[in-house]
Every structure is written in C-alpha cells, then in structure tokens.
Image 1 (spheres, rainbow, N blue to C red):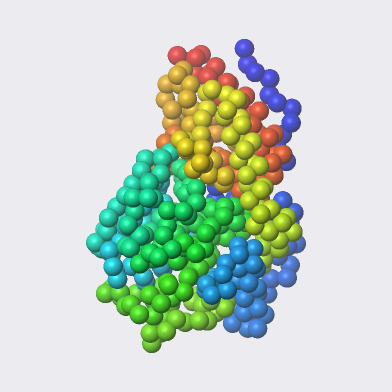
Image 2 (image 1 turned 180 degrees about the vertical axis):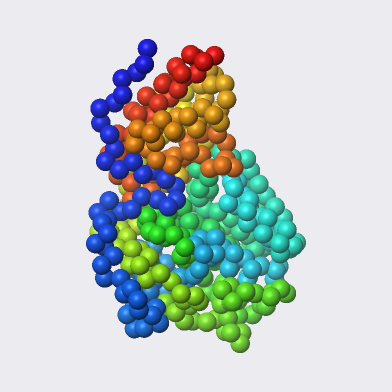
Length: 384
C-alpha cells in the first residue's frame, strides 16, 4: 500500500553541494550596488575587492600576517596555483580519501611528476594523519566534499614541521574550525558554504608559504595566472584586491552580501552552529531509520556540510539505480534538488547542510525522504 505523502514541504528545496543555496535573506536586489561596466582597477573596484578580503579575514579569524588573495578558477584554480608554485622543493605527500583529493594526486604524480608518497583511504574512511611525515609538503582536503568525511582537528599536524601544508578547505571554510597555525596554504570557493557565485577562488598563505614562494623557483614554467612573485618577491597587490585576471564584480557583490549576512548570524560561530544543526537533523534521521546510514564510518569525522548517505536495506537490488530513483522522486516533487551522490562516489545521496540552508527545510525534507524510499521499495517489488 502506498504511503501518504507528507503535508509539510521545504520552503527552499535547494540542497545541492555546489553551487549551494543562497543565504536565506538573499534577493536579486542584493546586487544593486555592483559597479557593473566599471574597471576592477578603478577605485570602486579595488575597494570592493579589498572589502571582500577584509571581511573574509574577520569572519574566519585569519591571522594578520597571513595573506588572502582572490584568484581565478574557483577552488580548483587556487589549489593548482599553490601546487604548481610551491611543490618540488622537497618530497611531497599527497593525501586523498575522496574524488577531489584524488584529483590533486593525479596532478602531482602524473603532471608534475614529483617524488611523492601517496596515502589514500576508501570512501567513508580517512587517512591516519599520525602516520604522515610533515617534514614533507603535504596536500590534503580538510572536508571530503564527495565522501562526507572531514579531518576532525589539526592535532596531528606538528607546529615545528619542516614542510608546508596545502589544504583544500572548500566545503569546510565558514562551517568548520580551521587551525590556521597548522595550515600554510588554505583554499576555498565562494559557491560552497556562503552560497556565492562560482569561478572565484580564495588563496590564504602563511608566512612560511610566502617565504617558500620568495626563495624557491619551480623547475617548470608557470602560466601567468599562477605567478605570485616577481623578481623574487611576492606580488603584494594580489593580496589587497589587485587580481591577476578580471573578476566579475557582480560575483564580488554577491560574495560581499554573503559575508555581511554571515556576520549578522553570529560570524564563524553562528555559521558553524547553523551547519551543525542541519547535519544533526540528518544524523538523527539516520539513527531512527535502519535503512539509511552516514557514509562516514567514524562519527568524529562526519562532515557537517556535505552529508553523504548510503542505503543499507537488503531488499535493494541495484544500489545505484535505487539511489537515483529516490533522488528523482524528491526532485520531481520539488522537495529536494540535486542530492544524488557525486558520480565517482558510492551510490547514495548527498545532502548539503551548510550554513545557508535552513534547519526547518532539512526537517521538512526528511519525512519526504522516508516516503520516497518506501515508494521506491514498493515499486521495485512490483516489478520483481
């Protein structure tokens, strides 16, 4: 017998893991002050870009002696910029437990062809950071966007390390507490936790990373968009809003709105609390239903942003097809959009729980997930 559809519906059905939901108070009017048709090098453009950097520093608590730059090509561009500019001075260690981390491994091993030790873990697990040699240059994701597994803290990273730490933090920044003294390069994009528009990346450099840039020249040529030094000195303009290439001032205005909204909801602690509440609603749902579980095996490593789920019911014949069918039912009903697992990840669902999502929408969506699961089980049994 078919289950009755729930009565309540989410006010916002956008649970995509990137681009993510806009801040709940956002409207197109938020962009009305964008200096469109103006040069980003004009005073108004430079001012907006500098404000974006300063507000980022304030909310995230980035130390005053760390540089923050707006760079091309989203988080991917920021990570590539760091790896191609900084790696090669010493042995590298590449750490991966999901698809994006695996992509950085490919770049370093197959493209740069560096002497690198590769440490990996399966989806749902994480590499033991206590076994990593931090006298090498270590590249890793803080939050595995496609696995829902995050680094619980930076305790295993020694303060007196000889190597640099390069951290892809794109689905962690603004939702998780990043230990700046343990991170030499940190990258993220606007379209994740803050719900900004795509194509712009953030690159945060520690003094140790700047020292490396000024004292080491890679053996390979660097494209213009990767170059951060000139004459052996850091190009300081990059880190005060003089971007390497032309940014979208419309996107800058959008990011500024998100940063102001973030401050209004309590800054970093408020943003983290919102993500935590969203994730907890999903985790509690999994605890209450024996047919679904968190992909992250250790509760200490569960992401509070990209919450990845797997179906565990023995009646499911084809996990991939089943998960896609459940996601389609929810999308067709206008209840949850874009929640299928990432294409390289195990079959299941991925529900974005970052700060721009309202907990009330998560709570309204979950009974529909229960409905969609049972409806698909019934449909499967009818065609068996």
